[in-house]
Amino acid sequence: METTLKPGVLMGALVGAMLTAPLMALFFLGDRLAGLAFVPLDLFDWIARNLPGGLITFGIDRMIDVLLGLGVEPLDAAAKTAEQFMGLVTFFSIGVIAGAVFFFIMRRRPAVMGYIPGLILGIIVGLPLIAISISVNVSATADPLFSALWAAALFLAWGAAFSWLYNDLTAIEEDTAKAKTDVEAQPSRRRFLINVGGATATLTVVGAGLGALLSSGDGSTSTATINNDSTSTTAATDGAGNTLPNADAVVQAAPGTRPEYTPIDQHYRIDISSRPPVIDGDTWSMPIRGLVENEVSYTLDQLRNDFEPVDQYVTLACISNRIAGSLVSTTRWTGIPMRTLLEEAGPLPEAGWLKISSADAFFEYVSLDLIREDERVMLCYAWDGEPLRERHGFPVRIYIPDRYGMKQPKWIINMEVVADWDEGYWVRRGWSREAIMNATSVIDTVSAESAYEADGTTYVPIGGIAHAGARSISRVEVSIDSGEWVEAQIREPLSDTTWVVWRYDWAFEEGSHVFAVRCYEDDEAMTPQVETVRGTRPDGATGIHSVQEFIRVADADEEADA
Ligand SMILES: Nc1nc2c(c(=O)[nH]1)N[C@H]1C(S)=C(S)[C@@H](COP(=O)(O)O)O[C@H]1N2
Ligand SMILES: [Mo]
Image (cartoon, rainbow, N blue to C red; front, side, top):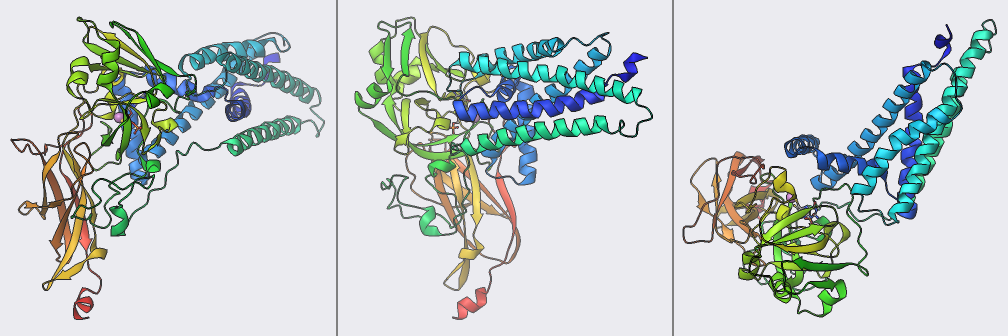
């Protein structure tokens, strides 16, 4: 008979929700206020890292489908936000389930035992989560010991609150039962829950609100600018105001083409963690050890001051970029040829590979032969003339020409010369071993607004980009309404490791048209881009990009008369 007077599983779930929301808000506040570990996101990172690769890719693909369907831009920032949101939902669900289970078990206990059951709950849920947080967190700036103590205190308080609420709710049930006739007694449980809910909601809002206020913002929000002004799309300077090497190029981008040199705030960003690792540039140093004659180690100052800096304009793309996707960008990379550093270490005869490891547990292998043969392989410490941004790999990352981003670790903390190749982070999860960039061409714009007249014909500029890693583009062709492929003009590129901007001035005909583009590599064979449609996994997407648009030129006749 007594058990019926005890609050049940649904009540437990409700209490779980009421207590877990402020717990998360306090974790967030600790993160913003003191750089303490944000355990809910650590949990998500840990899950994402330990799921089989196929499942992760499937999950990310579905997420991208949803975001694309919603028209969310920029996609990579939105994906990061969605990931963080999924992390918070997962953690919250654990709290709700913990509440339900706790009340379920307590119902079957004969007597109330003060705060002990709640504290035990806090330990059972908290301990593994703290262990997970310690193992994956690389973005917290506070001492891991402080983070662990802080998390332990929060989980214990959270657990104790379950006992406190459970005991009070039980007491209220009993009072209510005794006072069956008392009209006042019935609403007391509801009043109690409203009071508790109000208190936890206030704590949540104040904690999260303060945390948000304290967020300096790491600049991860980027605004997409569509440029309809032909002078700014082919801007002649980089972020620091330096003249770009192809400033005098004859061919101008069709208005509406993406910026040829990506503004640094708009450079795409992809990494395995929900937040970038935070590294102190003053204390960081990078060793090269393993099968070498001299173990060497470099501080950031040494890398900047003791070596002649090299600049390279580079187009970087993610292997999970879809045809015409936004995960590709171009900027100027500054650093030191990896060959120079390798020579200082002096690999032993049996050495074959360089294992590069990152602060976020990411790693990849680069062949020593490649480093020796290709001096463009570079240890990079600056982008667009500035120290690498936190999210782009501060303090150093590697550049390997012709490879997708998955081969190019950011946030490097260690290099080890080893004898044998092994699978890198994404290779283990089923992605390409070589990750050579596929030749790709994209239509950015069919610019009816920029139509112009010449010799009695109206022309509409069409334009976009094409790239093939470090293999250069020799020719771009356009086809309209499945007609003959005709050659487009190519703007002289920033370098032979960047995309080219192409343009085709089309003799306009009003109506709905399908525009398609394809490109050729700059080799003897003039290798054409692969036209077969193939998804991103495992070797990167291939296929022709085409767009269908209804093209009408406003007042074309009037302009011709004028
Ligand atoms: N340490 C580390 N390096 C990394 C990654 C990562 O998750 N961790 N992601 C890789 C992938 S998949 C890509 S596409 C590029 C993206 O670089 P960006 O974010 O600076 O554009 O970084 C690569 N290097
Ligand atoms: Mo990537």
